[in-house]
Image (cartoon, rainbow, N blue to C red):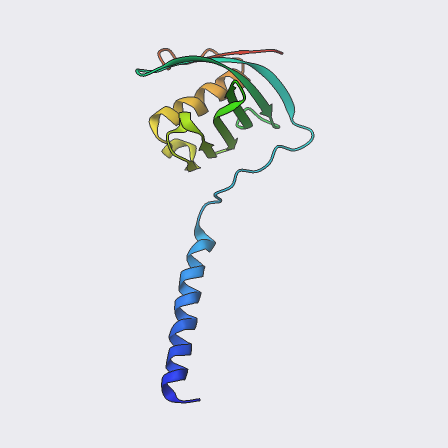
Length: 140
């Protein structure tokens, strides 16, 4: 093996190690799946923003706390929003999310932060924040 081949091999190894190492510090991009012992709560949600107003079905799966849940909003079989939260980390996808999100709930785009906050409030059975345009009616 010549010097050039060894140099290429070393550079390739360093590049791959550095490039794949970045993934070690990234936040998880896939939400955890609800456990078998999570409570399932069906209901409806009314959502209103500057462009639309909808009433849709919702399936809410609640973990051990109000800060651990999986929310699915669907209309006529189409999933409009899939929202998952595990304490301080959240995930969102679907047309109402505008674009997929994963990261800290506090750093979510404002419209998704409202969804996280209102879902947590609905699970805690507390009053929703005024003016968000999100209203849950859950069957308990």
